[in-house]
Image (tube, rainbow, N blue to C red; front, side, top):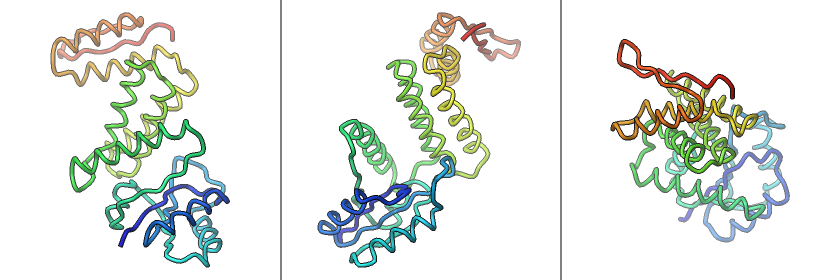
Length: 230
């Protein structure tokens, strides 16, 4: 039996959603409509209300299950033994985002049959790359927001701290897309994670070029100073 998942917030359910569901029902033996629960957003309807609305709208449609999606989609898909994810594209620009998500999910599944621990770091590193090397603050903002969303699904202190920090970074970039502070902060993470002298040297040079500075303390640990003005 081929089972597919159609994930989304469905806040509210639209005729476009229903059209995709009906079309998917003709392609697969079973379709799970996964209603996402995201604490970072303020939905118009609660998750239970959205599930009820979908069940009522699709009560005459066979081979459909409506379930709550609380956590990572890749975990949900493995738990439900589903191998196909249905997504709707409203515009050509949506394709790039969905393509990145598909690649991310595929990569995670190849790394391990189970979700790798602290997988949200992949989004953080992606955001740093986009901010520093591509100069695309909008893409970086999205990546940090995704890091926050993924990290929030873990309950340990480290993950919760990363979730809060990533969310603040995303919000800051939304208000200050050309911020030197954000770039220096990103370079400081590169510096802290560097494993060779060449990378450390480049990070220090870039920080100083942005108006910041790096001072090595008595403990031998470099400390980054932000520029006087953003």
